[in-house]
Image (tube, rainbow, N blue to C red; front, side, top):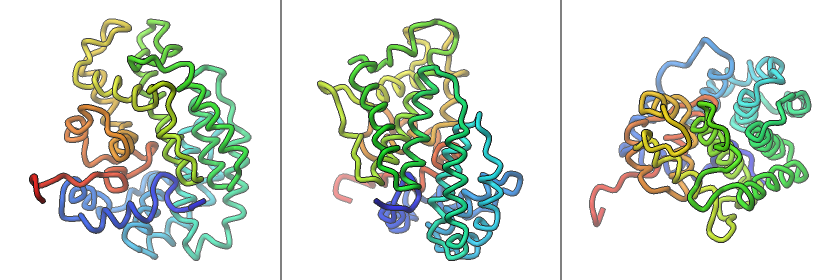
Length: 297
């Protein structure tokens, strides 16, 4: 059990520091070193937590700690993405001395926020609820929550991901949202798998006859490059697909870190440096893979 950044560890920080002058880390460092976001508690707290973890910036950590409890008190039962990002803030800052006295309160607020979630019973919402359950399970060191979320993840792999890569329940209704649902599902499953590693649970390797999360991710990434070929309905274009990745593509760095799907490198070249407040924060910094300079370097 490790507490650090929910989706990354001290080893990721060491990699980013060691290669800070190389791509893709160089631009990602500049993004973190820029002025703090001041317009919103969540973005500010996450920025402060990343500064604390990656730069040993104790002052930034203290500033983040000063707004952590108000952030957690503001959580809305309708916003599972806000909860996920807030749990990451807790994990980013929990080692800071200023957070230690308030940690029991912070964890109680996280637990209360999860209990207050009132999502729909849709298939997609169940995946997001599993991602939140696993994140909260890590924060609370609750194996029951972790295993409950992992069971949802495994069921998706076992029953719903087609060998070609599409997730069956999400593409059955051609309502203009089939691509968006596949996108969100891969994101939710990615956050679940990445957070599970902090509990010693490797869901990345879970597969059923060779079908896994990476099967669905590879399918998704293909249509970033060829959206007009989307099989499930007409009207899926680059103008619709690419902004979705640009705004919410933090999870793609996580995919590339461990089991890179085909063609993901070109996609990341378009997006980097990635900053996605609801998708892991500065994920190019935390999950970037150093670009090789040549065959022997």
